[in-house]
Image (cartoon, rainbow, N blue to C red):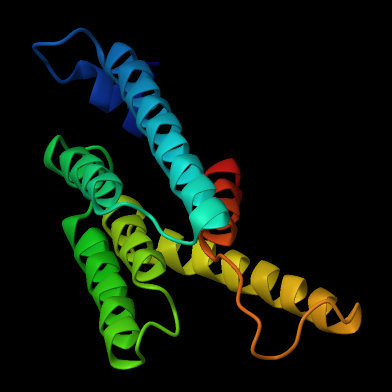
Length: 172
């Protein structure tokens, strides 16, 4: 009696030839690439948040560096599915347009950061990060109104909430 061994999907992938070690080595390397990029992006967001908290403005050169980091990660292929990132960029572009049309009711740096997040994370992770950020900002605003520390026209920096949303998504 002979037994036929059916290859699992992971075993079939291991049988494919590659010029760079076996697939397990590649997957470990890919995980580290993603972790390094996430750490760099978190540092970038933390620096932008510090600027937003202290002076309520973020230098353009810093936003350009973040844009370059996001574009570079897409070019070297970290992550998959090009259209997810294109839709993320389009969603970020919508925030940029809203920012310009409303005389920066939502700050231009905030909108630019949303655009960069869309390019870096894609539409679905951007949606999750924005949900967390808007929820946290709403709780913060409600707390300020209830404690009578601010009125309905009071403003506050939004980038720290975007950073919290980003942390929530990558930590999930």
